[in-house]
Image (cartoon, rainbow, N blue to C red; front, side, top):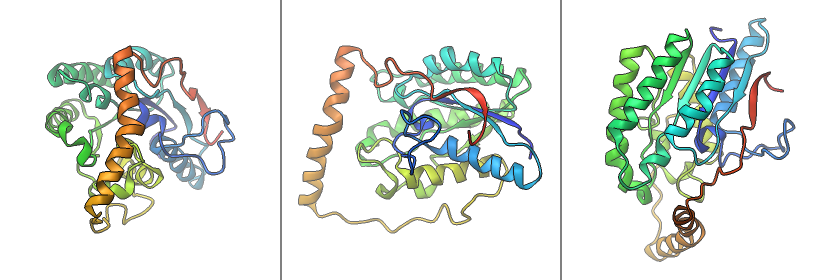
Length: 263
């Protein structure tokens, strides 16, 4: 196994919302979310120990709500200082949700971060944005532009790419949390398999990209669901924007230091 240590940095996707630990996380009961990066670390540890190697050293510095600038400024220096073998960097989704997002400027900042990681002799896994459901269709043009730049950055600097946009099994409501932005447990399992494949490893589930047929929802049920979604998730998000607040305000990383994994 190529990597003995791995640090994940990013926003809510990498923190693990909305993939609840079952049973409760024994590492820290106040941090209930697992997510694809924790799942990836668990599988890398399993494969290492099966080969007679020590457990993976793992840290997760991701914090929900963080913009790409904040991930790079706040999390990347801490990750580099710990000198892991592998860093995953996924961000930009919160930027694209905001009006006036400059995709080329975001891409330049991402490329600078990838250059820093590679210059330190560390492998890097960067993630594309994903399409999401119909409620997120307004973001697709900018997400697609950002993704094209991500593939170019990866080619120039020898980065691995976790391709959310191209993973067909993420195109269905079956993998979405109720907020229609984050993935549920099934989605995070798929994403962990996609990360393994991106790193040149076999997936846990060889059929992880298989898709369920689209589910038709009657119009009246869709209208009722859309109203509930707007009330429960969209309005609080808009309120935070007006107040200049973030869902991650006051939060710290759930696993800030490299630790034998599972802890």
